Structures are given as C-alpha cells and as structure tokens.
Length: 82
Image (cartoon, rainbow, N blue to C red; front, side, top):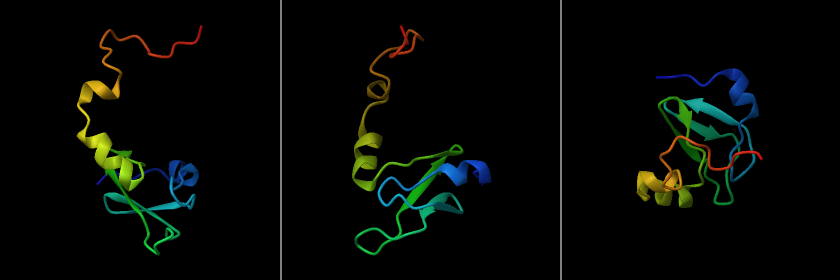
C-alpha cells in the first residue's frame, strides 16, 4: 500500500467539502462530512489520489483513454506557453 507523503496530505483538500484528507488504506477520506452527513472517500491508484467528486468519477473512468489527452499522441503539450 503506497502511503501519501505527509507534505502532500497537508495541501490536499476534499474537492466537495474543502476539508483535509486522511489516508485510510488505499483511500483518502474527507475529515468533514458532506451535506448528506457522509465522509467522502477517494481512491488512490498507482500512488495517485483520484480527487474527483463521485458524480464525475464515473464519467472519467468511462471515457476512452484518448479523450483524456485530447487525442494528441505527438508528445507535445496541449497548452504550451507562448
């Protein structure tokens, strides 16, 4: 189980409640409950926290992988500073 560094945890916040996050196993858990009284949980995949609100996570995981990078595969950044 990869641990998220304390330095990173100190700056990460729940995208819904704005509260701090604590690691519990393979998930980060919001310190404060949402408007429904539930503490939101966020998966950690390959050491990367997936901090998407629940309603957006399903859409993001359902999208084909070429949609995540705008379909660009030439190695150039999409938003290069000019």
